[in-house]
Length: 270
Length: 79
Length: 135
Ligand code: SF4
Ligand code: SF4
Ligand code: SF4
Ligand code: SF4
Image 1 (spheres, rainbow over the protein chains, first blue to last red):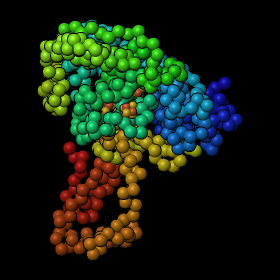
Image 2: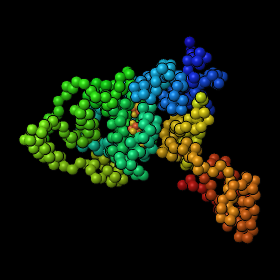
Image 3: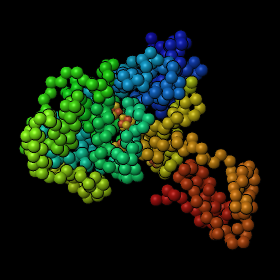
Image 4: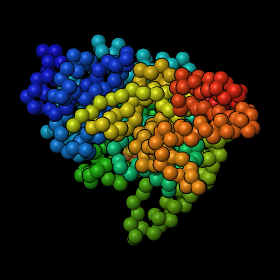
């Protein structure tokens, strides 16, 4: 059964009140909420090459109407984000019906932004610029000493125009009171923002939370390799806490008191 | 939990190029000597590392374009 | 509950980034960058990201206001336009057309900017036309 039929059935049977997918408008593939009131729109239903954070839209809708039943076309990254939002009680699984579609690379998306799959094809523009943004954190650590790593990140962060795009587009940034707007942590009105605090605050929040969808890096006008940074944060989280955000319905280790610890404090080397 | 969190921050600082500036040690109130030793060692280590490169100058680093060029250059030359 | 997305162009500066408004039940709820737009390619600056805030601001003017005796009074469009035209004519007759300047904006379309300069040059008769994005 093709996806249009499936959506029609879900709507008609009342399994979902609104279905979030894409449609084509003036040559742009944009998200759209399909409901029983606009069934005729269904013939334009598309599975987009462009990714938008549909699960973020779902949280907005849920805010307005908590028991709304929402259907979503979901790729792997959408599904990971949904899992994470369930564990943080932002959405409840009873109200969400994901319809899984092909992940990238696929018929819907022939090149991949997803780090897990085709790292080398990512960000041609960025590669052209001479910095391979999909670098391997291990190589980065091995090839650069402390000072070089510091220079690199300070250079990257200093390009920031403080657009808050990384936070705004992120499906798992849902706080009503964002630390990045807290004047005690990040000085208001200063541009570039206080570095590296601005980015490290966000990086810390993304530890145990970022599901590596890459939307932030896509949205960053300064081409800062945010995904690389957050991926390394979660490499640490998975080493230290044995937790992968979005993989299942397990709560983030940062929200609970852990049980058994096998780590030893590190020796102080001079 | 503390140790996990501290390990996380240590690893993060390492990735950022600020390695070795955070240390965790358990010292009971009965271990005065250990306390003195750890604090002395860490003070020595920190003095040896010198002032933090971001202390007190986060703004000025970011506001100077030539400074950024230098950083970029430094990074690429080495890489 | 109804939720749709409306593509538009950012009205803040001359760059003209493509934006997408998330409209829930007829009210703009948030702004997103339009990923397929050739100008901004899925990126926005802080002003673009905050477009929905000024659209929904309670401080927006919703009707023309005419200043009478030092106070703004609500007026109809007809009254306001007649009032403006009368005073422009008066200024033009007493001080000449170059006493009037026309400032246009990146917040309106090219076509509207064209019409504004036409108004300045052909109707008023001055070359005093300028634009905030005349970089
Ligand atoms: S990759 Fe970026 S946008 Fe996606 S979850 Fe992580 S921080 Fe958020
Ligand atoms: S940056 Fe941190 S505080 Fe701000 S919305 Fe994201 S997780 Fe919340
Ligand atoms: S998206 Fe990029 S430029 Fe914008 S605030 Fe985030 S890091 Fe800075
Ligand atoms: S988003 Fe920013 S750069 Fe783009 S048109 Fe609007 S104001 Fe200009």
